[in-house]
Image (cartoon, rainbow over all chains, first blue to last red; front, side):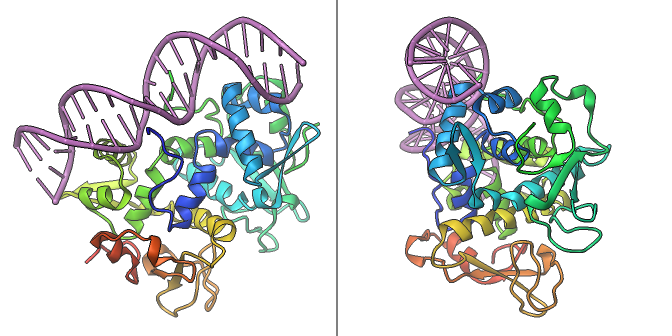
Length: 167
Length: 167
DNA sequence: CTGTATCCTTAAAGATACTG
DNA sequence: CAGTATCTTTAAGGATACAG
C-alpha cells in the first residue's frame, strides 16, 4: 500500500500523535476550530480545502474525540483543546523563522491583557493561560494584503476570544 | 496538482511551519536527530522510510536550515533545535491520550535529575531546560516488546543525552 | 555505507458538479 | 448550507538494483 495509516514506530508518542493530527490539513482545521470556526462551509471556504477531503478529516477527528459534532457544529473537545500547546509551539517557531515583520498573531491573557509567549505564559501574571482565557488579535507581522478577502477570514482577524463561535 | 507544496493561507505562522515540517516523515526524522541519529542509513533503518523519500526529506531540511550536512552527518542546526518545544508538546499529547501505561519516554534535566514536563520545565529547579541539557530514557509506558530489534533502535532506548551522536 | 535509479501500485489531493 | 460523487493527477510507498 502506498500510504499506510500507521507509522512503523508506534512505540513513540510523537508517532502516535502524528497518526491523529499529522495528516495534511488536519492541524489547520484544528487551528480554525480554536479560532472560532464551527461550520462545514466555513472550514471549507477559509481553508480552500476540497470538500471531500474536509469530510474525511472532520469525520476522523470526531471519531478520535478531538472534535464533537452536534447540531451541524464541530466543536473542540477537552482532548482537542489539549492540542493548544502544539499549535502554539508551531506558531512560535514559524513566527521566529518565517515572519521577519514580527508575530502573525498576538495572544493575550484576557484577564490582565498580558502577552503570551510560545508556551502560553503570560507576561503580566506569569501563569500558563488556558485557551478559554485567551484572546487573539492580529500581530505586528500580520499582512492584511495577503489575507483572504472572504467574510469568514475577516471574522477571524477581528480580535476575539479563542473557542468562541464567530459572530 | 495533488499535493502542492504550499498551503493557501500563508498569513499564518502555523501554516508556514507546516510547509517545512508538516510533510509525512519529517518530524520523525527531526525526532531521530534529537535522539542522536546522524547517518543516512541509520535514519533509513530506524524509520523504515523508503530511501528515495528520505533523500528528498533530508535535502529539504538542509535547504531550509533545519539540518546541517557535513562529512556525511546530518546534525540539527539552532533553528532545528528550536523545534524541540513542538516535539515535546506533541509527545506530551500523545502520551496523555494514547499511552495508558504512562509516558513512552522520560526526559530529565541532566544537572539535577528532575523530570521535565511537556513544556520542558524541570520538576526540581523549575527552569525550562534546553535540549542540550536533557537526557532521555525509556518511560513507564515504553513497551520493549513492540520496539524495533535493530541495533540503532537499541542505542536509541539506551539512556543518553539529547543531540549526542549514538555510540 | 551513501545515496540514485527504476518500475509498479495506491492513497489521496484537486477540480467540479451535484443531491438532500 | 452540508455533504456526495466523479474524474484526473500526483506524491509517495514498496521492492529492488545499482553506482561511487
